[in-house]
Image 1 (cartoon, rainbow, N blue to C red):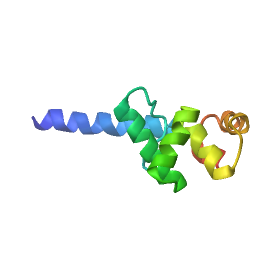
Image 2: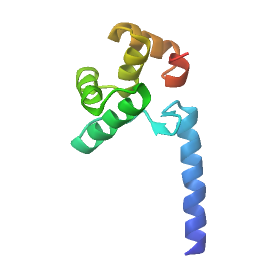
Image 3: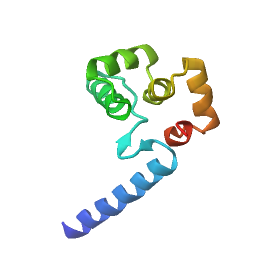
Image 4: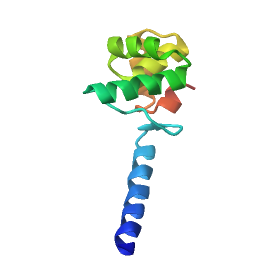
Length: 101
């Protein structure tokens, strides 16, 4: 049991590090979540609300329109259109932190 626990911890650290390097994480939030079901859509709306300061209902409405957590955050934080937000994210190689600078 101890070897299995240690292995799991190491694998979790490696996968977390990989996700951070790929730009899927902003702070301690997984911003690359795809809202493909109700549970994930709820999580995505809460992530948008936490980053932007919007209320949950406003964040859920924004997510429903944009269908991407990263695009919705960039649009709200920087006051950009969808096309401009997507261009900014593309220039930042999909990294939300870099796109918000």
